[in-house]
Length: 289
Image: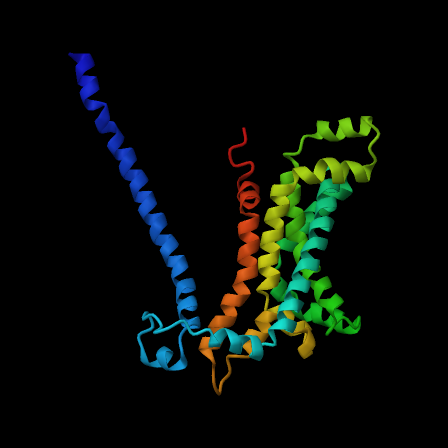
């Protein structure tokens, strides 16, 4: 009888777990809808005419797909120039950051001297200071060194403001790289450069993908530093150009929404391409031990 009672009551114990799982799924679905709703509204507005935007309901769909907003965005923003500038600044800054932060993190993780420990603490302290608070000294240094209104200057400042986080992230990940692999490479006669680029760097793909995505997001969408350092029209970025569509006199919302959709596409493609490595890089060490 005891065995039969256990069999009868055993299935009922699963209900609390099933209810908890269903509750979590419902909450996560609602959160996902909450975050995706603004994006859907932007896409919806990008296909509306000005008349539909002001007279119809904000949630109503456009009567037809109006691609004229995208054509206007291309013309008004000088998209060929601004898009190329933004892509150039982002790509060069991210590549240099990945190489610089990777080698620095490797040196800090493998060298146990006090100088390297001090360097690590120095970079960690740099994360605690928002670069918005450093705008005045950044601009003063850049102006005196003739770096304002130059491509090299804005790239240099993006690297300077992103290196602290990059070193912190890669140094934490470096502890998961087996030291025995590097020792075996040295025994086989590999130089320091070959050991890093052939042994260590391939193992850093998840952390590198995380760094690339996060820094690319920040640089691609940056407005403050780009507007501070660049005033020449031929050097402006996409975000600075989009801001010009909003003014105190008149605002072209439909064209601006189309421009926002265009600006989101490259960074979304980058995230989808590196999503597998990004998730691994963010969760590494979570179940360690």
